[in-house]
Image (cartoon, rainbow, N blue to C red; front, side, top):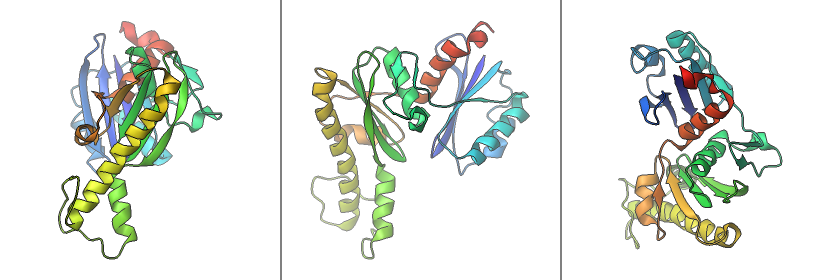
Length: 253
């Protein structure tokens, strides 16, 4: 029995892993939510995990807060995975491997294990993150851009007269500010994904799978002119695979 933690920029995601592929329990909590109540709410009544493993892209303070909650609920401390140079058949492209976000690495581990490489991975959340993964597990590198919501906030913060009075709709041509802002930002994200995918085709050989994950993925997918395979819980699934390979003792509990 293993508790998996994914500490992202916007949300904390967790899953309880047992012997079967399906999660025994899972949950998501926004960082502004009632984090301190986790031991008495979402985690109350769960069987005690034999291992707790986490992946984090947040600051040390939040990691420590989550560690304290895990200790309170299960009397155990998380093992935090830091990005390796290689693991589970995936080879990190970064010259300084630890500078690649561990979430990106684990998403590639999940994609590689599922047999979907060569692929382009697009994670649409706080940031829009793109990675190219070859069939043999080589990470070719990637791009990071502001996510759609961050793009819109940055535009509003930097301008005096762009002040939409409502959330905009995504259109080909907008005749008002609200729709123009929404349409421009969502289409910019879609265009970057399509451009990256097109440029990676010759390097990855043929037609790489496009995997789309993240909180904005459902709204972004219909804007793409490419076939898309939706992914979910990629970081948690990659973390489970890494733990199975490097911390296998829990598998028999």
